[in-house]
Image (cartoon, rainbow, N blue to C red; front, side, top):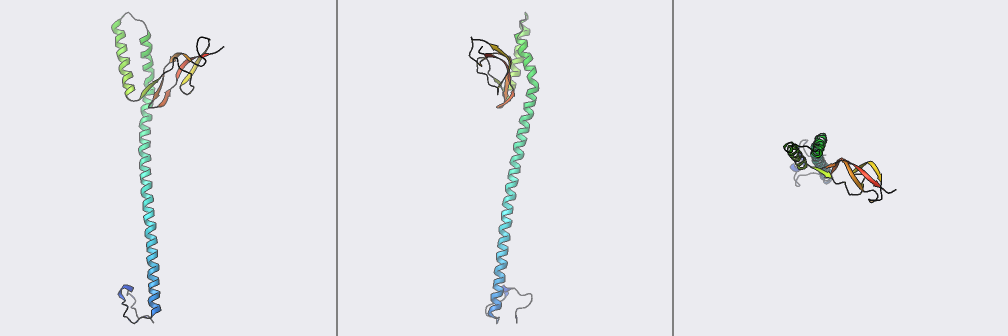
Length: 179
């Protein structure tokens, strides 16, 4: 017979009470089991908290990276749309004119536009005199010649550009081929 009252906790029971040893041992085992269960639940909750925190940090980093990539891509598209204007300025500079002020004005506009695009990440691709690289150059014309090294670039039809390390537009080139 249990002498403990129905709402009485084990902590309320003193060892001096007249309880049978097996009842105390049973209650002690029940309390130990409950303690172990609570410890396991605590460990599980702590693990879930750490995982949720890690997932949140990963999602935040991913969102920042995607935002940065989007801004870079948007800038890349804008520069790609402006490149024909830069090409037109280069062509205008090659045209002979008797009006020196007009030529100087076109040159200043070209330099300002080019320097501005360079500041945001535009990099011209060197072509003439270099070896043909299909990753950077697009062969528009192949010229058989003994005067130049095989697969060297003889001329450039359109300048190629990188934007922040990524190929924006390949250079259109004339390539030497051994006969």
